Image (cartoon, rainbow, N blue to C red; front, side):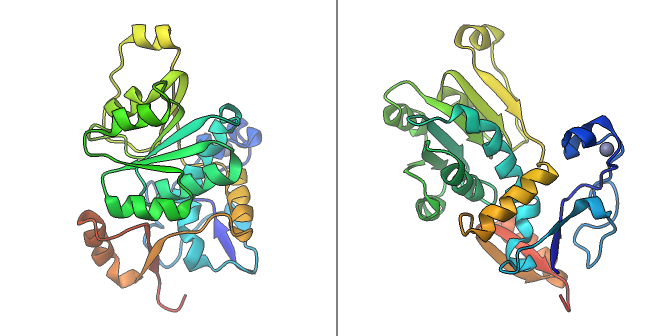
Length: 261
Ligand SMILES: [Zn+2]
């Protein structure tokens, strides 16, 4: 059988593990971050991390779902209860995570999906992933989103950027009592507390996803409801992949394949 692994090594005994909140395990290790195993041919984990793959799925095609995809799925799943029929969700950033977020929103909710990105090419791709509206982030994005939402703002913002002005414009797109999911990072959240009280807006952090989220995402993928946009590189060409990412030539998610895999 082929398998995919949940990115965190977890103990299975702590309260968080027992509750299914794998990412908050009290005795965890993260291959590639706190222990060896990132950009490597092999990594050491435990049986707890293993998810059996549907025979229709090949590891190199879906590898990015175990981290990027999982993160997008986790945030969308949290938003499901507030995305009832007639609501709108804004996806900020249609890159490696955002394009999976768009598909998860379409698969899990009846919300209308508005995608905001600085790249016209990324927006074109987003339409193919199921976006109902696309908005170019050229300085007019807040007014355009407010127009699409009849001046009210969107019930949900999924911010896959989290820096470079995305937060400020994202908050301005949020409806009263709306939910702002912070997924991308690098910036700083500065909101007057009186605004949080008077509009009852909510800010929610998102750290990767749970083991069960990954199992669910694999089921959606096997059903053909989530497709990954990937660029495959041999493991030895990891630096080329990073250069392509930095220069904006890498769309979707880069996959490193070790020799012989
Ligand atoms: Zn644990």
